[in-house]
Image (cartoon, rainbow, N blue to C red):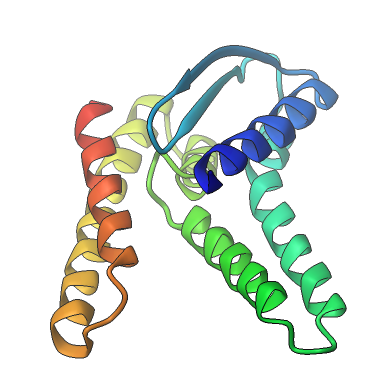
Length: 165
């Protein structure tokens, strides 16, 4: 049940981070492979919202470092945890609106342009990045017979973006 435990982890750090920074959780929805936690951003400053958005990425990087420090016997299990957490951190940094990187992009854009323009730019960047990831994953699959997981992630992101409009 790795998806369930990832969802539980995401729920825990988002709830703790949002409450610690003075925000209010307003919506929780779950799907087969996801959990979406909507929180009231009007009660938080950009700095606090940034901290909530970066919390998951920071946790993944911290946990990967922690496992690396424990991995003195070259344990396969710890190496797997390091790889998974680094992969999750990198994927979450990707600027697609349903990921933490997309939320961070939108926060930066809100500081530079109006909210309406930032929403439009964010939506276009999200689709472009998801399609780019899809093309790269198809190329890697065809040329190098790479792992299919990147292709599955890109398809999942595209589907989620299509349904979030």
